[in-house]
Length: 258
Image 1: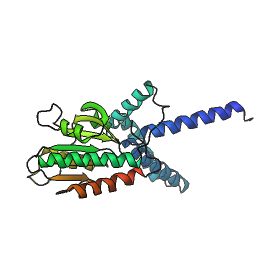
Image 2: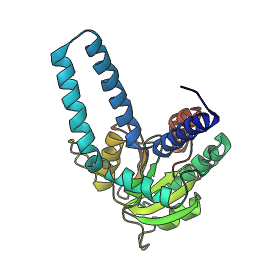
Image 3: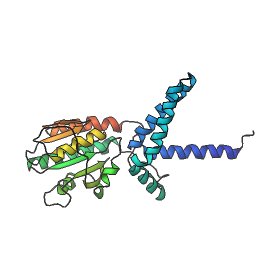
C-alpha cells in the first residue's frame, strides 16, 4: 500500500485535532478520568498478554460501564466543550498566566482579604488551579474582570447583590461572583458557618485554593486538599497562596482555562 501526501495530511490533521481536544479538556475533571481510562486500558492489555480471562472480562465490563456513564457524569464539561467548538474556540490560542501576573493577583487577593477582615466582612474566594471550576462558575453571575482589591471588596459588601456565595478566580481574572459551592459532609468545628463548609467541600472535590474571611471573627482561613488552615495573617496567607499557586503555574503545560 502506497503512502501518499494525502495520507500524511490526513494523519497530521487527526493528530492536531486530538492535540487541541486534549488542550480543551485540560484543567477539568475529564483529565483525571482519561488517566484512569488509560490505566484500565494498559491493565487490560497486560491481562490479555498473560491470558488472565477473568481479569480481562472484569476490565472490559468496567470500561463499558464507565463509557456509558460518561455523558451523565461529565455533562457540564461536554456542554462546555461543545459550546466552545460552536464558538470556534477549539482552534483558538491558549494563554498562559505569567509568574508576574500571579504575583500581582495574589497581592490583590491578600490586600482585599486583610481589609475585609479588619471590617469583619465575610468573603469566600475560590482560586482555580488544574481542575476546572467552570461548572461552579456557571452557578453565579459572570464578571470577567481583572482581579483587584477594590472589586473584591465591593463584591462582598453586605449590601451588594453579589455578596452571597463565592468569587471564582482563574489566573488574573474574576470569572464569576455569587457562585454556589458544594458543602463538605464531614464534621467540622460547629462554630464555623456555611462559608467554611463550602470552602472545605470544594477543596475536597478539586485542587482549588479557597480563601475564607469570617464575618463573625474576621479570621482568615485557607482551604486546600480538604484541610482548613486558620488564623492566617497577611504574610502567612501570601506565602501559602504563592506556594500552592506558583507550584501549579510552573508546570510546562499550564494554561488558562476557557
